[in-house]
Amino acid sequence: MSQIRVVLADDHPVVLQGIKMLLDSVGGFDVVGLAKNGLEVVEMVEKIQPEVVMVDLMMPGLNGLEVVRQLKHRCPHVRIVVFSMHADESYVLQALKNGADGYVLKGCDPQVVEEALRSVAEGRRFLSSGISDYAINSLIEKAQHSTNGAYDTLSAREREVMHLAAEGNSNADIGGKLFISPRTVEVHRASLMRKLGLKSQTDLVRYALGKGLMPLAV
Picture 1 (cartoon, one colour):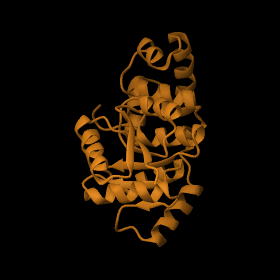
Picture 2 (spheres, rainbow, N blue to C red; picture 1 turned 30 degrees about the horizontal axis):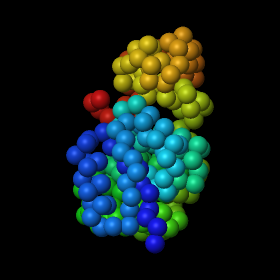
Picture 3 (cartoon, one colour; picture 1 turned 90 degrees about the horizontal axis):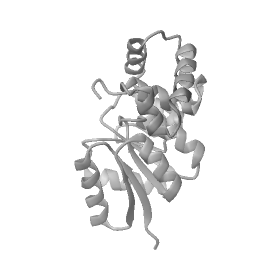
Picture 4 (cartoon, helix red, strand yellow; picture 1 turned 90 degrees about the vertical axis):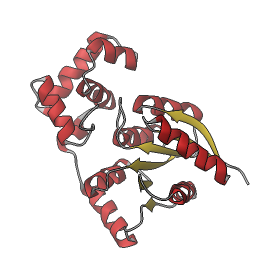
């Protein structure tokens, strides 16, 4: 039987190595990539084309929710599990809305991670225990009808610039990370600020924190 090719993404090396060791020990999985930030995992998955990606919710560069959104657009066949410490319905709802196939809470038993990856690889949904099938269907229905308002009007590039800018990166730094010129970054930044109705860097950081797009400390 062929192995399930998996890419793991988390900004904590201990978590990455721990999950890799788990999957190596149980068999049936081939960990083909380890990523430490959101931009890296999107590029890696496009190149490697694994069957499954397991992505942390809060990462630098792009958070897990935006990673899910971009991967479902660029690599729709890839199955995605969000691995998170956040049990709030709002995070689960947004993950499903963006196209996640599974949502697993950190702190779960190791076999739950294995079960989640196998389930989504076989085409099924998986959410951490305690959420019934009825609740899953309810969340998905709500996700399909929910909206992020102005955030949903941003282009993929504008969202990338927004995440990096909210972390305090300069236009030059953002340009280097995205392989575009500082002037282009400035254009995208002005556009996203206008669409979101924001006036300053402080407004941008507050918006990102309020929307759960970045952790309280980065």
